[in-house]
Image 1 (cartoon, each protein chain N blue to C red):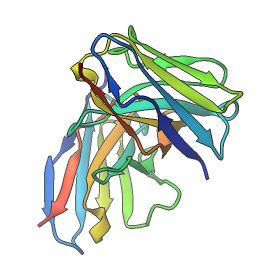
Image 2: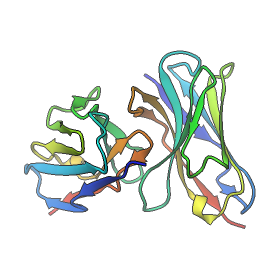
Image 3: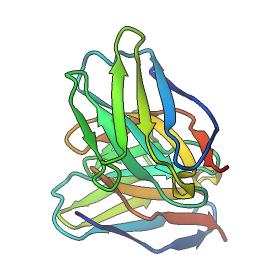
Image 4: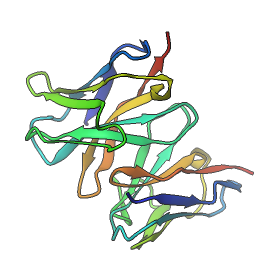
Length: 120
Length: 103
């Protein structure tokens, strides 16, 4: 059974960088046709895909966030990370990590989510 | 960029009734569409992928259909645990969701 767990600060100041890590167990970020992804959900709102990391090193980002996002993998620790720069209150959300598969990037395993609040 | 529209916004039904949820894409997505269920406070759960394939462990009362621009998620007989928000998704884009609540 694949399990994902997000970790990182729950509070980030405006203009600073949000950093989160997703640790994977029961599966490997360094093999298979899976897209290790970040998705967020502002309080009371819908879902927004942020981007993914593929074990080849390839990445793909939502165009609306591309200039501020970096997603990277750490295969030695079987985890992947998200960095979002120059955050504002609009980046306050629950951040989920998830595993995607297939041509449609279907997300079959998810972390529980972590709330990140941007506030001074 | 493809836009997904879901209808209705809210569906009020009783346990045992059937539910029909719609997702429309702004242009053809062939069969590349997934459906998720989200209970408040929880992560979304994949129900259907590639328009009509049930994900592992999903009960048979959930079914998906459609291709091109029009898709449907059908719940044949609502159980108490099915009252939730349902999202459709195509690659980068999620629909705004349909809330199924208890009448």
